[in-house]
Length: 463
Ligand code: UDX
Ligand code: ADP
Image (tube, rainbow, N blue to C red; front, side):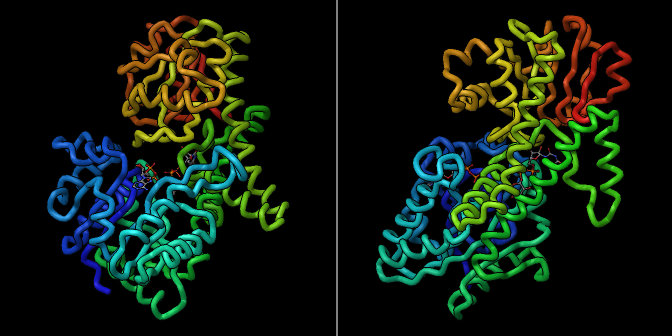
């Protein structure tokens, strides 16, 4: 089938950028991104393209090029489904917060709702593509719903997991290492795969488009994220040992990364990984393994999460210990709140958990992040079981300027590796702080020698 009309359900961090790039690279295809969230869609349609709800370097440019031509953002979900030949499901699949599998399994209620909606609305054959990360065998559930509640039309289900990383989404989409498409081995399944291969072939070299059976595709996504997160937890585990032994984790990372079998990427010790994928996907892997009775497999991967939780708590504990075992009433400035640089996404950001621990010790947290709004920060804390609006209002304050956030602070904690932090006038920051002025660098971002020369007491992870 030659695709000329695509619908994407879910206008979030995955759906928005992915569809913007497809629209730019395939001017002959009409791409409509739909979402139930009216506010979000209104932001995607904002006359000032800088106001789109997802911050990603280069994204506003790409949206500006296609929006209103072949790229549309809408809340008319039924209409877009009906008109499309190919439907991407790109809705959120958070970890369940209730019932069986609570805290581990993926909550598939949004996916199921989508499937039911597609089944109800469709009047002709459609290809349905799983874009969200899903537990293995979700495609089967979607297929069941579509086949049993539909209007007798044919559905082909494909798995096409997203490998973009936030902060570099546009680049990752334009030059992917690979595009993975899983589908049925039947002739109809293979035809559906080919239709999607053709879409990507508009800009991705054929040898980078990998086709597999559907289960391999689903499991590959979980596995890729588990391997990446495992590297971060591995280096973070060693960062603690480095602190005890006098080794420097950056030097260790460099030394092992030069072994071509190991490779140099994803070896940066940090206050802990965050983001919407790593923890969720590993918990998912753990849950699936347990459900098949594979307890050793489950325990093996769960350790990656245990290490990550330890790293976040350890960072907060170290701040408290260093500040003479009390942070009560002390101002601690947070540079950064997003889970990594160049994104306004804060899901599972280490900053949330470090703030939680410090607020419990009655510290006053002063946050500055170049892209995250105050509303989001309060919202992040309020989703923690330990917090309520009232308590947070006391423990946390947001600033739109780093110098003000640091003024009269006892300590600074670097939680995100935003480039601009490196360019600050650190002498000026030092002059405005209470002494001794501490910097706890959770990203090994700043220049230790320069800061110590000014007079800061500087501590980085793993050295
Ligand atoms: C990840 C995968 O990289 C991507 O392929 C998948 O599609 C979604 O999940 P993302 O979560 O957006 O992407 O960002 P990523 O760059 O992987 O970083 C995840 C977390 O690990 C961040 O908090 C980051 O700061 C941390 N990290 C990463 C480290 O602490 N050290 C590193 O060396 C690398
Ligand atoms: P991701 O990082 O996976 O893109 P987001 O939470 O940023 O996740 O985006 C998912 C989007 O999907 C949200 O904007 C949410 O409103 C939307 N969504 C969830 N369920 C539905 C649905 N049934 N129909 C339309 N949109 C949906």
